[in-house]
Every structure is written in C-alpha cells, then in structure tokens.
Image (cartoon, rainbow, N blue to C red; front, side, top):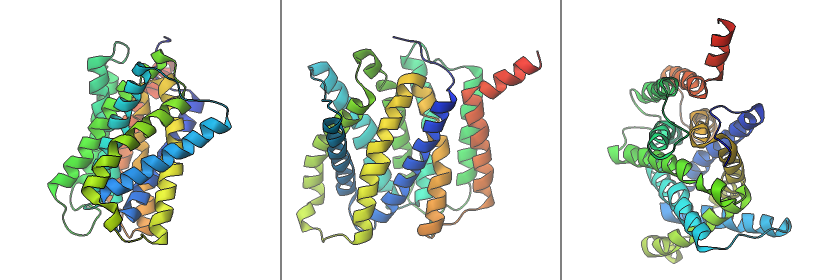
Length: 307
C-alpha cells in the first residue's frame, strides 16, 4: 500500500474546495426539509436516492459492486459511521439550531480525526504542527459560537452535543475508510456500497419511528431539497470524498469541514433568514490559520525560504 501523504496536490485541494461547497449545501437542504419532515425520513430519502443514483452511474459505466463478505462488512461499517449516525444527528440538531451553527460544530471533525488517526494508524501520527493547527481551528469554532447562536433564541444543549457526536462519527469514518485502499475497492464502489448499506440500516428505524405513511405530502421546496441533498450533496460529494481519501489520507480529508461553514452560513443568510456577526468572521480567520497549519505546506515553504 502506498504511503499516505501529509499534504495535498493542487488538484486535491481543488476537489476539497468543491466538496466543501457540496457539503455546505447539505446543511441548507437539511434546513429546508426539516421544517416539514422528521429526521429519519429525511436521512432515508437522502441515502436511498443517492444510492439509487450511484447504482445507475455504475451500470452506465459498465461496472458492478464487488462481492465478498469482508467488503460488504466494510460497506456496512462505513455506512453506519459516515451516513446513518452523523446524518441523523445533524438533521435532528438542525431541527433546533440554525444550519450555520450546525456546520460550525461539524468543523470539529478534524480534531476527532487527528486523535483517532493517531491512535489507530501508523502513518498519521499527531505532530506539533498539526496539533497547533487543530487548536487554532477549534479556537475559531469557539470564537464563532461565543454569544448567541445564529438561530432566534436559545437552543438545547442536546442539539449541540448531537452535532458534535456527528463530527466524532465522521472522524472515525475517515480512519475506517482507509481499509478500502487495501481491499482495492474503487471510490465509486465505496460510495455506492456504503449508501446502499446505510439505506438498509435506516429503513426499519424510519418505518418504526416516523411512520411515513401518516405524514402529509411535502411541498415542492422540500422535495427539491431532498433531491439536491441526495444527488448533489451526497452522491456526487462522496465520489469526491473517497477520491481524496484514497490519495491524501484521513486527516487531510477531514480538512473539508473547515471549509464547509462559510458556504453553509452564506446559504443560511440568503435563503433561511440567518445572520452573520463579526465573531463569525474572526472565527473563520482562525479556522483558515488552523487549516494552513494542519496542511503544513506554507510553514515548510517559509522554513525553506528562511533556511
């Protein structure tokens, strides 16, 4: 297995920025859908439609999902860690806090990822520079959360804890997903397999908890939000996610969460009536500093220039 790089190429940075925009949009789509539908129904619609979309892509490109018990167990684990748990926790949290706040809390994923990767991988150990970057990024998140949140009025602590729990699950998924490099499974197959297994996992829970046959038909805005959530913010996004993960590693892919809040907050301001305060701008500046430190390339260039 080729070694995991600690920095990214310009192409990988481009894919990371595109991924941040797609996932930033997911918080907006969640914010629209949660007004009419319960969390598990939203999550099932998201993963099931995304899985169906990727199965069509597989068929159109003449490919098929691999067989074997080990691969499908890995799909199941990834589906739970990367879809079922975090999607449900975030949507539930967004029922009580604004989309921008949820995306900011999601930006703690790199902290969890670095710690998990340090404990469970040989190549991605915590370094002083990465540690400083995570601290700076966390300080930025804290600065953005200081004072009233983006929503009107207060929010239960449980909503914040739910979004942080989702970040922890994403961090575990980033490390767990590295095994697909060893198994030789393509990014498209991984995305399709995990979404298929997460759909099967969530279906009985959704039927039991939400009783969807008792719900009214959602409006056009909600239906469009579900389609966008599934096809753009999930199907396409996960193809990019696994391509970056395969080459750049778990800690680098987690940097996407530093880039998600700006797009999520902007969409919330434009379409959901949220507001942006100076503390959020200051927080995003610290997050940018943290991202640069975790990647390390600017620091290494500075050191070479002053050697």
